[in-house]
Length: 71
Image (spheres, rainbow, N blue to C red):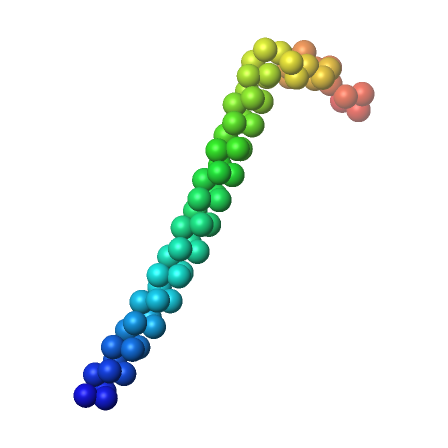
């Protein structure tokens, strides 16, 4: 009977550890999802600004660029 109690105790400990680990992993997933959403929103804002021509910083298209002087 003692062996059975030890096995049950071991299983309970393993279950408790796994339950705690699942909770920790779930929290990591939640945080990563929030970060992905934040990055997605930033990317969409960037695309919107870019499409409106708001990033014109003097950079020309390749077809408009003059070759460097060493050519």
